Image 1 (cartoon, rainbow, N blue to C red):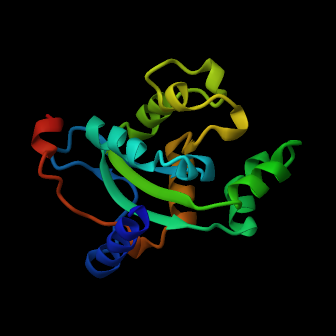
Image 2 (cartoon, rainbow, N blue to C red):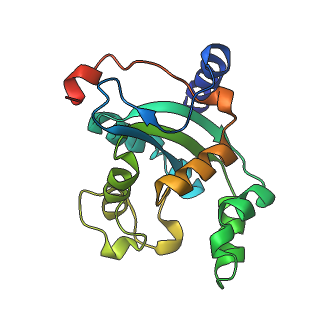
Length: 181
């Protein structure tokens, strides 16, 4: 079912999406709205946690602007994790991330990068608080089910790596007035 939802979303996105800037002002012009890249890693997809993760971001009030289920190549992953390439765990990380499907997403909202990091919890699940995604669903650092951009700059690079501009949907969320002042 998740694959069908991803295929439908991809179809809608490619048919209805104008090209937009990654960061722009919200409609009330009081705060900058930003975008972040979130990925459910192969362990999260295999454990059927994608829906729960999407639910948490939607319930928070963030807007989904792109999503696709992909089998990533080692080359794409090496580019994505280039900042970690000198570390001893890098080859295993790339191998693990290419071992199964990844649910790649772009979310939008005020302070979404920082808030997403808090919602995810610490990289090491045993340091994560209950109520966070990793605190609730993870035990091992090598199986921490989710990736999220650590800065707006990283988000812009990661979004550009995983999505074509025409895959980023611009739409008005019906609940926007109930979420933002």
